Length: 124
Image 1 (cartoon, rainbow, N blue to C red):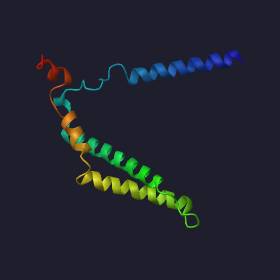
Image 2 (cartoon, rainbow, N blue to C red):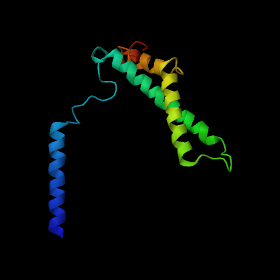
Image 3 (cartoon, one colour):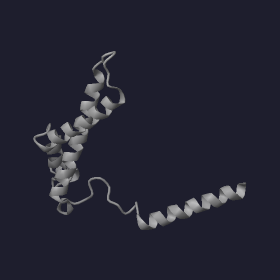
Image 4 (cartoon, rainbow, N blue to C red):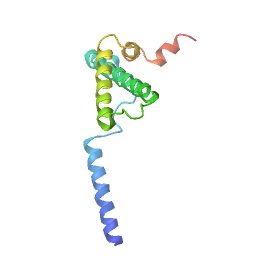
């Protein structure tokens, strides 16, 4: 039995090593290290809108959960699925139109060319 465990752990280590060779985690840039010139503004805008959509979806979900359910007239599991899909679509529509301003703030912050170090260096 110990041989089977050590054999499977060896296979696991080999799998991890092969994955780390194909996807080197250590070489990926950390937050804030990607230069602004390397960012695609269209992709950044899309990602910010998706994040705002997700935020609105969770906001709607929490608001809906705060409303007490009617005793005899609940729709059961079907109603939960429908309202979840409905909230997701409303969130997408809100974020794609004007939104709540979250994507605009994210675009301003992530699209800026100067990092936090450069902004603080001029204040001394």
